[in-house]
Length: 401
Image (cartoon, rainbow, N blue to C red; front, side, top):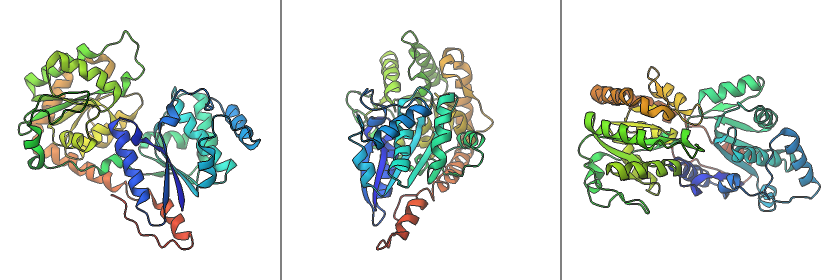
């Protein structure tokens, strides 16, 4: 079976994108009988006027008609892959939200695969923000046609159910829950080495991994922020207070937006920085062994929890962090990332309370993370069933869980 996997998000520096891209590519490629071809994520969000971008349902219909008429301007690079595959497997991630061209191109590709080329389509690992009516209409028209739709959290599933009550879908946890941080004994000596966390262009002073530490990231709430909005001062104040009142601080830059902020914070504080280009597994080791993690990033919060690290959450560019806190700490607040300067005391108090809760809280977080990990299983069942139904494919599952 020839599978087209798109978008393969491993071509993006974001830690979560790299982890997801590798996970799905490895899992799909490990299935016997699969010949895998990938389309990188940059095709979906590259600002290229030659590539169609349907903003409304009528615009998507016009694109489809143009393809049927042989006018494929801007799609020449992807149409042969759609025509030649046996199945399209799509990692929906956080693409479908207002103001994001990548979500509309994802819906366009899925719709072309289904209605023009009659291919089975799986749309997995999906979150939705349908607060824009034109985008909601695109979703309502496209997603019910897909062979399998999988949501990774309850809010998006409920939003889709309200939009299209008769549509079927599945729910599986984000594949980030399969991360496995290393034991402190396995890496803390290495972590103390000068330069161990240097990842060009970032340089980091060593930190003592044998002592308690707090990891701090920024938030996707700052994506597309106004040029006059600089959250650096708030993060500097927060990190200094955490270092004084809780534990040593390790800055985390899991995405380009965070990197721009945290490099300035490092310049003002001298605190160690896990840079954007750090190997993801190395970042997971540090996050999973922190005494608490403070930030507004979905995947770093998940990676931290897989090691038992509790989360003090800031809001993100969608409902993601509120959903993650419901999964981990349902009675705790989500702080406003853009009002950080006025919430330093409250955030520090929450971090200190989590550290003071000690092993009992870590055990609770580990238990909840393990439950989420179990909910990843089954997310490739549709693909495996198609393989089993294909003559000559005696397929054996060897995917990571």
